[in-house]
Length: 97
Image 1 (cartoon, rainbow, N blue to C red):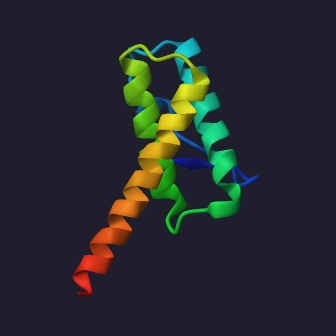
Image 2 (image 1 turned 120 degrees about the vertical axis):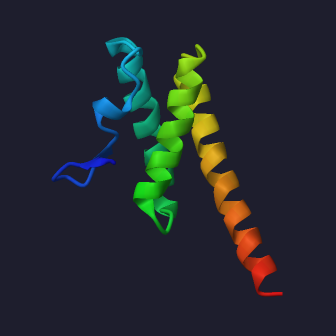
Image 3 (image 1 turned 90 degrees about the vertical axis):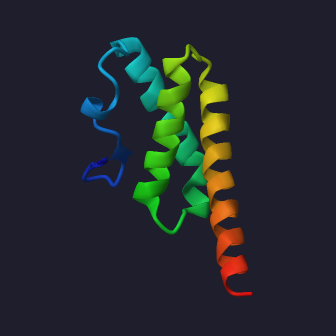
């Protein structure tokens, strides 16, 4: 589940970030997720909540194995989301054949 601020900003609740990740890592996750989301502002996915969850999951997985570079976290989160979008589009196209 994601939390939507009155401003429209989406956040992954801290209780969904594994408890073994410390406060500094949690801030890193939020930073990388916010930066990735800003890059998508002009190309919002059909389901923003699902997209944000996909990116958050990617970032959490990477930080869990020790990645701490915000640029890399953002890159891989966007890459995972765009890969999922391409895969979904390809599947839809194949279903119509």
